[in-house]
Length: 108
Image (cartoon, rainbow, N blue to C red; front, side):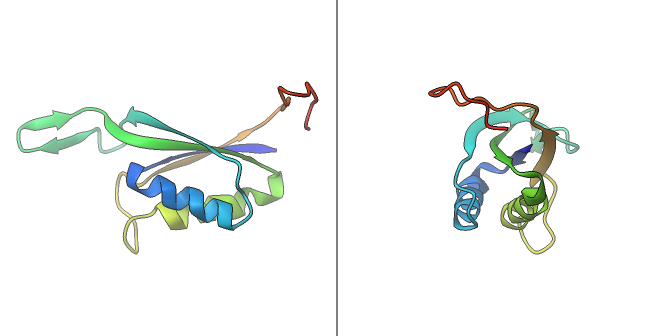
């Protein structure tokens, strides 16, 4: 199993979650974060914003589904036809173990 951590624009997160649910991946976690990427924040006039609001979406999927889920996120979170700086990043991380709290059972 893999955990996909997707950092996306806040205005795109609901659309991404809807697309994932419609594709058969309903379980996900979303939370608001602050950060900066290669653009090193945002400058508007003389004001520099060091941290930009983003949303992080976490989803755990079986290994064969990683490419499918990554493509759904990429296609949905991208702004415009070719995307722009600040659209986000996707990180894929191995999941060593998963335990359901209510039952205490290992899921892997």
